[in-house]
Length: 155
Image: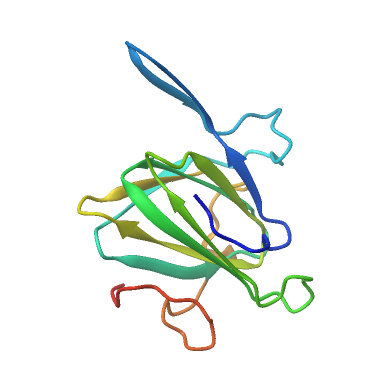
């Protein structure tokens, strides 16, 4: 589910096909033949505990592909790129069992997430490059210069 007047320039959203039968579920998160796919760097997941906000950060080099595999999460994006046609635009997505979306987050777009509900959420990321700490830039989740509201004050 997303409620965004306009997507941030470079952000793409894919609805994941979920196949369900009596044996269980298969969800094709990202395929090399998806129009949004650029390249493969690695796959990892991160948990986020209830009431916690993990924001803001961005990368100058790599693109992230985010998908929630357990629980529910609010993903926030903010375009702080001075040369972007959508500079100043924010997007919000709720990912979870009723919203099977992959969110492509291009370089330079601030992003973060917070857990919704009473159990930890698990967010899978398929970035285009192997993690390099020198390409991760962090800001305070409650930085007043970023016009975005996280409903709790936790880190």
